[in-house]
Image (cartoon, rainbow over all chains, first blue to last red; front, side, top):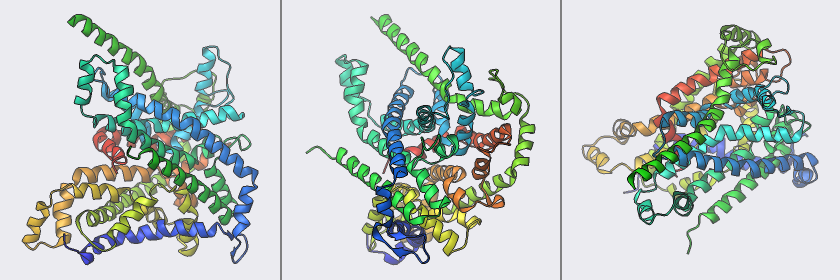
Length: 286
Length: 279
């Protein structure tokens, strides 16, 4: 192909303008803002102001701890569930496949606000259907909103319900791209289905699973709506406060843009670290 | 031999369904309860009995919702914003994807590297500067532009359409070029029609993202008359004197149309989501 600068940029420029203004510049800008004291007019450069505060802020460590706790528990459980869903949906023995697919994939289209509202009602203490059903099988009702452990569990349950099917869609696409003949030799040698799964399917799916894990980790790290709406602003008493919620409160309730930017860049730092780990996990064996 | 094998198959099939059916029911349960709640009066929702079947109170609940917030107006804003956003985003990103897939130009490597290099950064990083820029510098808070334009930065479509266009054989376009057809006409009348399935998948994913978008509209359009439907509904959650049946009616109105679209266009939906993985 010959070089076609003018033509190419005519197609590219409209998007690039938006991309530069609303993505690239804000990335740079929020880095700069994180080194500024933003509650004085005009803002002044004060390198240690926000970052120093962050390092000594118990609210930050609480949000970081909660976010990492949700990450470490919820993401592996959800990915494992998504793999199970995808593998079983892919089974040639399955009847009424469409119905099962609908059941698992439907949450993908449900908005955060709509499902947060439903989960609040379903898990309410006295009249929630979940406690009623637990009661009817002899389990005492759980106070999902006033105690930290059940509240965290509720957030994890909600996020898992919303996103497991999404990951299952991606993993299913990965499964269907594995050629049949990979399994033929194993079947001839009478290797059990379970062994085939662990020794053939899983290794071939590794890139897709790592991709899903990274996507989920970055999503969960920014978790905001569920603790905002389901457990009411990170309750009880900050027990489900996440980094996303801390950023919201600092940035948009206290209008402390500098400190909120430092929180945002902490999230970015974690995301970059996780992406690097992903690249390392995906490297070709030499 | 054959019978024992087919018996084993039958056994495995039964086991599969015995495991998957309860899981599917648990997964459908919140959606089902959303519908049930939306048809029940509040004193039914907050009663000690177990109610698993819909009643006939949807209209009452909807009226209560409309009394609590102008939900119909908010739905109007959400629909207009999602439609406009989808059209603009599909157009912008497919033009950019076309340029990256089909031309050699200076800076191409840098553009691709910047898009890929920043794609895993969390959206939270740009939230504050975007807000400062749109609300303070441009003074566009509580406008349609604020809802539509900033989210257009999304690069998913660029990568998706670049992939789609680069898989098309070059002869298709070269033939038109030999005849002297202009490049923008080749893009509009040859390339885009060929990419229809990909465009459909992309449009569905973008529409859904805009329809369900919560954080940005919550921040930038917080005035009652400028709120999108999810934001308007979200303001009711947690209020003490509010109709929960009404909130559920709103949740149903946000969700059921998308579920219908999902069932009708499942193939495109799944293609769009799975494409996130094919980078």
